[in-house]
Length: 185
Figure (cartoon, one colour):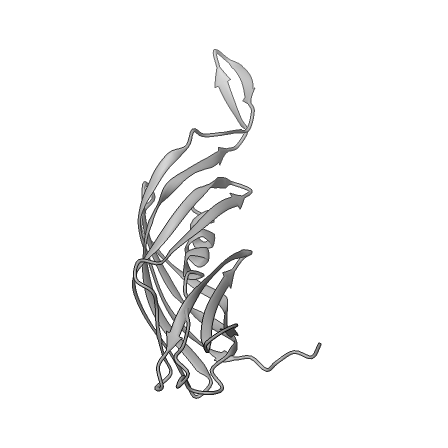
């Protein structure tokens, strides 16, 4: 399960996004390769820090100059609306929530991550961000097969899934990255 926490933390990073006013700066849309640090404090697991990487895609939405920020890490994705200020700052919606169905070899379940605080800006082709999410849900961990000795005999226990257990806590992340060159189609 501890190996899954970085994946969960990175997927929670993927919870940013919105819609800019018509005066938003030009040239902020694009795909950014973001690297940073994720601090996970989710019970019943010990708090840990992890390095992390994600892809952030800032794109215009149809309509009145709207933007969305999509975050993707290790196969998990969340896209939320954002607004861009004339200085490149991004404004996130209050209490935005992203649901995640976790499907890892050693963990499964459902987690909701609610944005508590967020700061982000695009400046000179770089995206900088810091976010904190409240996390709640339930998870199951895989219990591997094991050989135990009982009364002098070896007995093989099969691999199985532990019962669902509630998870609750916070995930905070910060990072920055450069806009990637557009790919040809």
